[in-house]
Amino acid sequence: MDFNRSLRIVGDEPVFETGLLLAGDVDPRHVRRQLSRWTRAGRLYQLRRGLYALAPPYQKTRPHPFLVANRI
Image (tube, rainbow, N blue to C red; front, side):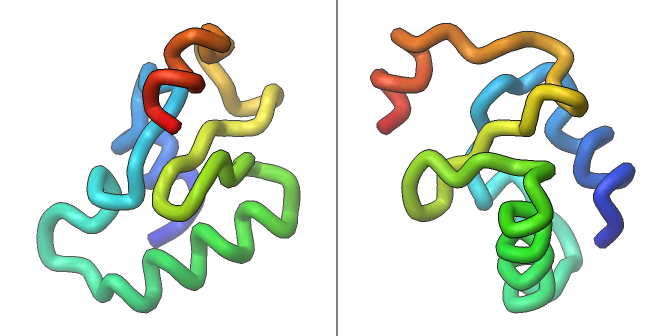
């Protein structure tokens, strides 16, 4: 899975869970490895295990602090 495809899947979600990218016929180990790489590269923020937010250049909408607090 490449980053552009994951951006299309995530869409307008400011905060998303790993399960959103694991739907369908994908290798879960590969998806988790890519999420780890994108986090280290600064493309994603890991809010907690399994919960991510896109970094500012890739965000369409900035997540509201109450939404983040509710999801954590």
